[in-house]
Image (cartoon, rainbow, N blue to C red; front, side):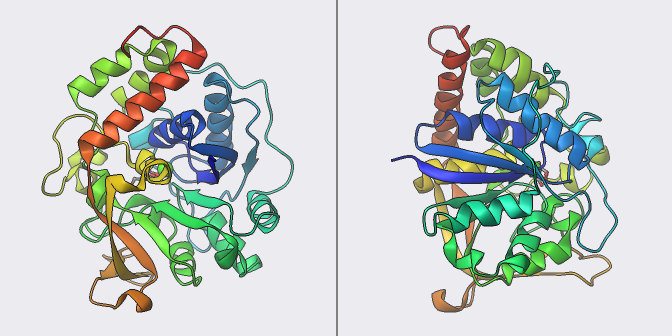
Length: 327
Ligand code: RIB
Ligand code: CA
């Protein structure tokens, strides 16, 4: 039985690859996409989610727009990394569809409330929508089957030396979310930076027809490491020096194949007042399992991850037609 999920995201290059993965994996039922401002403004993240869904043959997946600004701070973005459009070098036909009516926060609450215990909520952007959802309906934390994020880091950041982008963009929202009473499955930079697309991976993407040549490769080809190779350019021990890391695909691949990751119980608190450390996910592994609020991914089977991802993308490519054999 496929796992029903809602994907809250800020497409965004790696969010786009996460949408394609979630739509294509037979073990995932992508119920809906909600969008938030992050990599680019919410108008663009919403348009990108619609365009990507239509391009991969999933035009029926509802896309509901969410928050345009963080809870407290001014909106900042990552256009220097994801490009003006938010999809890097990928130019997709504009969607013929439109966002679903209503707000993402109400969609998340209403959908999860109608199926308590069944739906996995996945967030791959700043946590603004999620924070407002659990504030508006605190029971949400007990109604989800799982809550999974791409975000944070037990070690260094990528936007500052201390903070990963999704947490840095809205630290107050992240603090609300980690304090909501659920257990956050946190796929942070500790593992996601190890998913750089190697030349061999990029070559296999070239065999995926239009999915590879129109979306995956043009998007990844311009996915820069961030301003002048600063904190975002930094890579932790063991990270590949190949292409860009597909951070957000880790969150949806955990839903499909959790055994790819080693999770460690921890308590995670989010810094909201530090001048140098705002958005830092302060991760304490010394707490006992019962006292934690998170399961933090600290290892990944990188080879298994890419085999899963490429196999899933090959399925999407076959749906689109045009994939070469052996893709
Ligand atoms: O730090 C990586 C995260 O920030 C990813 O979700 C990427 O899409 C950006 O939002
Ligand atoms: Ca993202």
